[in-house]
Image (cartoon, rainbow, N blue to C red; front, side, top):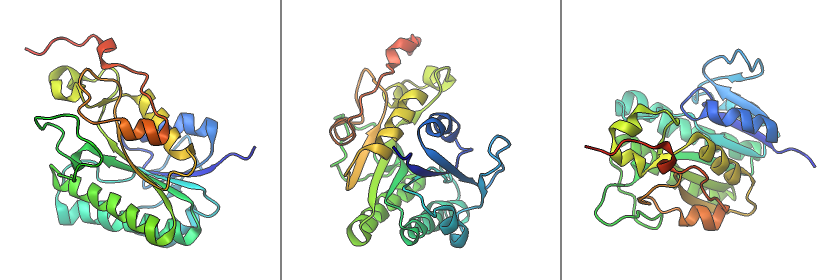
Length: 242
């Protein structure tokens, strides 16, 4: 059986180092980043502004996993617009021009308000960005809807909760993050499901591990992608908040 050809952008960010090893085992993986990869001499070196390079990198690719972004709040015009608005458009348009079948887009909990009085937040709830970074993620989700409806491209947007390693100090310091936690192992499982699940059309899902209070509903992730978290924040034996 032919391996899927997958292009992953932004492999040196927070998620990339945890996704690349399992993806290399499952797929014919190509990577793109603006930093060199000593362990990947074939990594395509580019930012998100050169659509010609992006299009060549996507030749023969089945699925693009788009992680590259300014990954937190930052100056809007100077940082967020070039990377998270123009850059996202360039990736989507290059994918369309190259005949890519599906884009898996790393969105964020910043696209919604996760600390409201009536959890869980559901995908069907209107976006309520809590940062201008979150606004750019809503833009990416909406652009994905356009490319699905008008260009026939499949799209899976994963609204990532609080992605943290197992020994994260932030999980000890910020109790709210425990209800949003996404572990490295569950992140890899969720992105694999987003790549492989057939006939997803257009889908938005939340991504967390198992938590005591499901602030972000996993209903769509379960129903659309067949995702069920394996890691449980309770197993980390974190101290009770003071």
